[in-house]
Length: 434
Image (cartoon, rainbow, N blue to C red; front, side, top):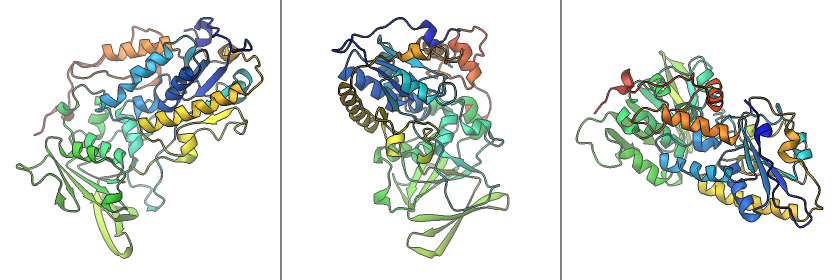
């Protein structure tokens, strides 16, 4: 398979006033990176942009971080598709900046570099914790259920084991609600989604029976959107109570899943206890009042580690032509609307910088030709992946994603020897529960 540099047409963008086209590299093809590319083209239509990503696929958290049953939010990827379809905008996937291509190479070949690498691992608790207790990051769990080939759970020894019948979720943001909703739904609730059915059957062979959501803050300071909690409460067979009060009244029939939300609970320790996990908490402002809660798995939904933004290994970060957007700039991921605004502001800063510089030739993507690995993925190759995933989907799913890099790269190359998913699922998760 040819690399993007080998197959890219000669797209000399309309020149600037001095006859030199501006060329910008964006590191990271998630929402922040894509919105930045879109805003740069809107601000200066003749600018040339190369968006690089370590994954073979574009769209980052739109593809792997937004819950698989929220296809309306994921539809923004169609908007990004149109950005990459423009002459002068290139996607280069399966390329790790700092490993495959040196950061200094980007500085040499582009007038400006924008870092849009997102954030890394789930934030750690920082409390007394038994190393043998099963604690799972919410962000990584959602990546697993979204078929992310790099999800840590996919490669962890116990990552694809059942979470059990009772779980504790620490955190009161939208990601916590996403996890509770995904673990409480039946197979019918995932119609038209792109859930990874194999991963779901592994970690939740049946909808989880009891979910405890614990938050440090009082209820009025919860970071989640009220609409998200309402959506959870409206899932058929799910009963939600907040500090013991039913959110939508008492259920008429016994619920499939009970979700108990408790505020002002500060976690103090997580220990193994009688083959289960005991979460010890104390009331906010009263460390002497201790509560114990036993469960099968603890899921942390505390945000992401801003120190793991994948940029600290780069040299030249202090250069005036290096910009940050999204996670590397703010230390948080934010929602799509926030990403779009921050990207627009960053694009303005980039263009203001470029227009104030002495025009100089930069080779752009052509200057990386000899450095790109043979397995680099172009936008055209991504379209082959996209088509293959849609084609292989169950009739009641919008797509079935490939779950390994080898499968993704085979699809990118147009291989016919790809595994297809049976039309019907088997196993406990396919059984409907009322």
